[in-house]
Image 1: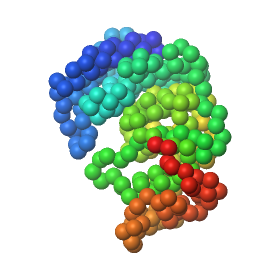
Image 2: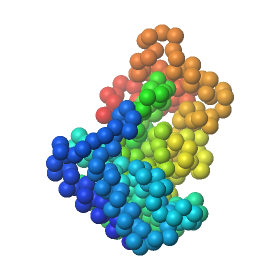
Image 3: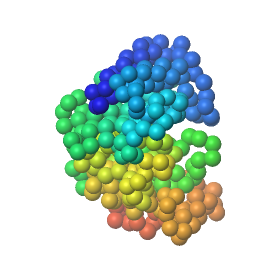
Image 4: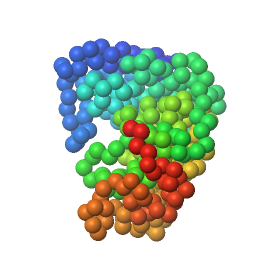
Length: 311
């Protein structure tokens, strides 16, 4: 099954790479504000579905662009597909995007492939058998202190997203770490955590096809993945936190209060921080500007002061 998924991902990657040679001519439509889909997304998804269903006609399909339109409707085997994660990057010629394919059996992800066609990087994982990059075994990083870590994230971009709350969350993390990155393709972000290129990742508003394959890569590489409060059943909760075990454990107390599953007290504190009384409070602070950051930032904030943010 993993080999079939790899075949499908590489076929999709070939379509994406050909289109990238003349990205200006690619037809683009908009699903909603800042949420784009191209003819390349559709062509990539079509070849993936054809490849999978040729090999396994009795399997189900859950794909970003076509939903459950193809495949068996009641199968225990469901392929979860994002044919081009990072479409906005692709449209601009910014070479950070990937194909993501996962197989869930009875609701549990058992196979995962994330393929980066611009670098020809193939990340694969099978449940219980480890995670690999180009057939070389990968592990999450060994860093134990948040101040030494590189963390990736995704910015909110849809109408209705709570930008002020996100800025407070970002400030909470940024002042405790060596750097914060926003590459723009969640499946690749998770693959990079699995490979140890970054030490952690967090984002809200994600769909199951963004995180299914990448989450298996992380766990098979020895990492942890869940929602912001640390609960493991996160796939359809639209928030994702991943990292090596030590860093994951340090991020949960910082990000947990921003979770939709946070306690009422934490939610009230976040609301208060996101709607400040003074205009100045909207600025991302050099010290602990977010009201709720002050409590937990003390040990590491002192060491971070005086240094330029390394991004």
